[in-house]
Amino acid sequence: MGCFHSKTRKQFPGHEDPVLLASQTAFSVSEVEALFELFKSISSSVIDDGLINKEELQLALFKNRKKENLFANRIFDLFDVKQKGVIDFGDFVRLLNVFHPNAPQEDKINLSFKLYDMDGTGYIERQETFVEADIDQDGKIDKSEWHNFVTRNPSLLKIMTLPYLRDITTTFPSFVFNSEVDEVAT
Image 1 (cartoon, rainbow, N blue to C red):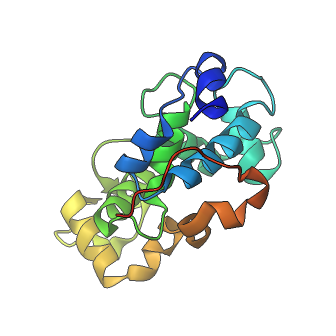
Image 2: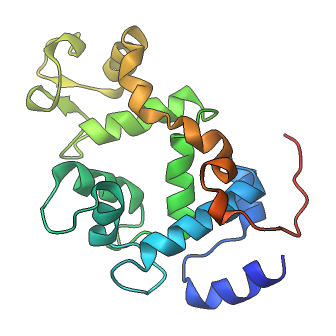
């Protein structure tokens, strides 16, 4: 992998091998490399430390870092799987994978459940969502009820798919470069 692989590991603490990330996600190696260029851009927008903090993610999502945004905070919390207050490259790619058009629907259902389970109790409570989903009328929605609800209402999962992730290299052509890694068909 030459240039891409050698320097980045020192500068980016959470950097992982693109071949490994591609094998664990719906992304190709070229797409992972393109995502790394996007990650570098976001992670250096406020503090150039090779990690994405909450302010940088909010700036990337909404072009605004001054106003507190509940949705941006929630998305950040989901990306920050290690709960360290920062997002490393591996976490960035793995979570974006859920939004890939080829990602399993079950992954999208699980992430959307976490998104709506605002207080992390393992339930979506009445103030967090729709009464219609609470099948047993106990005032909270468990993962099974959520699964049934989104299966009956598939439009809820539309936000869980970003079609341009199908081919990130054509979406962000400025991030494309020649990789020395041969793509393996899956």
